[in-house]
Amino acid sequence: MQMRVSAAINTDPDVIASNEVFAEVLRKAEESSQGNLRVVSPEGNFVGLIAIRELLALVTSSEDLPRVGIAADVCESNSPTLAPDSNLDQALRLMEAEGIEEVPVTVAPDSHLVGLLSRSAIRNALNHAAVSMVTVARSDVPIAWSADYRVAQIRVGGAAGRSIRHLDPRARFGVNIVAIKDADNSTAEFGPADPDRILHLGDVLLAAGSPSSVRSFQRELVTRSTV
Image (cartoon, rainbow, N blue to C red; front, side):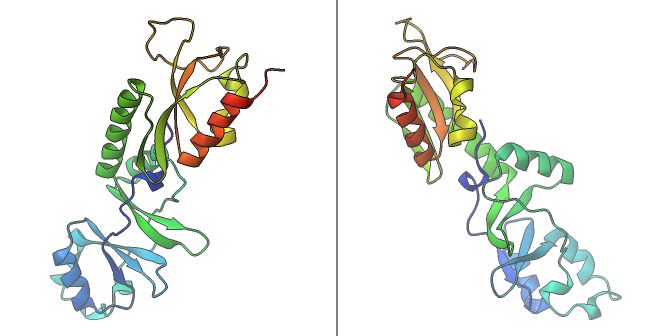
């Protein structure tokens, strides 16, 4: 299931202005519960990261400390970032490759900082999604558990006679089909969604995506003609 980064970010991470004096950097680091401080420009654009654990070595270094004036002097400017519409799989791969626990989330073209994504937030989001899917599979009430993501049951109507692969919901709507329930088997539970399976009238799909995407895909399933 390709959940977007925007569904799991902390939109109020600890930040410090790039022109802030070093004494303020130390104060912010002492108060922060996060591993890094995000350094931003006066316009709110991402400049780089200050690793709090590395500040101690800097403070105890009589050689380097006199050259430090402001936050921009001690931040790492080549830090990796993610876009809000990246997915959580991409985020985890980036974290593994870089050996990091959290990634700033920015918006092009100016790398405006909009939040922070951490491994723990990804775990919570995936756990929440799993619980949501189980709940929705047992009830026809959709669950919208963030502004950007919902899980809902959709019953097949006019799209009967076509396959999931033909409808291509991920590419066309940004919707993932998590599971399917066979209309021809009254005792069936939700099972894996075979993309080449021909949909039958009354089949129920468990769909996940943004609220608007799910609604658009639902209209497609209900109204599309098989002709």
